[in-house]
Image 1: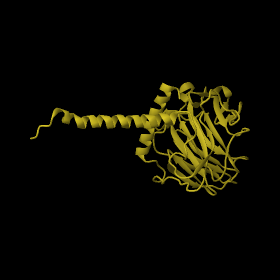
Image 2 (image 1 turned 135 degrees about the horizontal axis):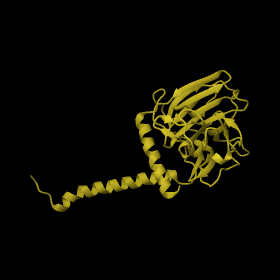
Image 3 (image 1 turned 90 degrees about the horizontal axis):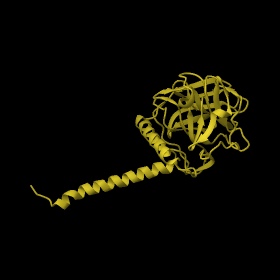
Image 4 (image 1 turned 60 degrees about the vertical axis):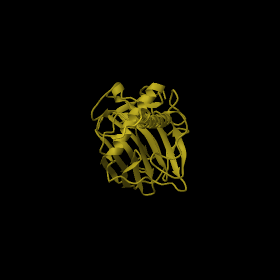
Length: 290
């Protein structure tokens, strides 16, 4: 047996420590960068190629941008009356609260400078839904709806109906796409939809989870977030739906969509990793106020 010099025995250990330190620095830097204020990235989450950003709200201010959004004070939706007092922007997030069984919240982009999602565009949002594991509290949703509903259609990108679901509505009726397996509550995930000429593709965390035919009139659709009363009811802080950002895109040369996941599900490893990243990002925001 050869006996190495003391210094040589430590060299591999030093290299491992250096590698771990560099890897940790890169990971923290990347995650912190993702949570910091700034312009949208070059492409949608999980996509590649030439995409042009046509709308971006990072909610980095201290109040809602009323040029881009309206709150519909006194409106009726999902078993509640919506009130401005249940809508706030804080800590880099839009916060929607279900105050009690009759008092909820909503915002939509039917505003002077608001964006309406046309056929051929992709829209995505980073959202944290309230709940416990697979159980989604109340009736929160991130969705699109056209004028003269249901003629222009309704794409429910992520709708809490006890579990987190995808749905579509038009003149031909309700076309419920069902639950997407996974624990989607209490962490930020990215939910988006691509509106094609005769179908919609829904992506969660950059993975295709649903693709369904559409038969609406193809008019541009309004972006909507809301929280209503239903299912497992929780009020106050525990009811809050958080939105980190909203981005809309138009495809250009070389724009591609990610490879599809198995029908109706996101790979468990992606769901697990995105949950870990979502939790880490929330901790970074709490520490640095981003």
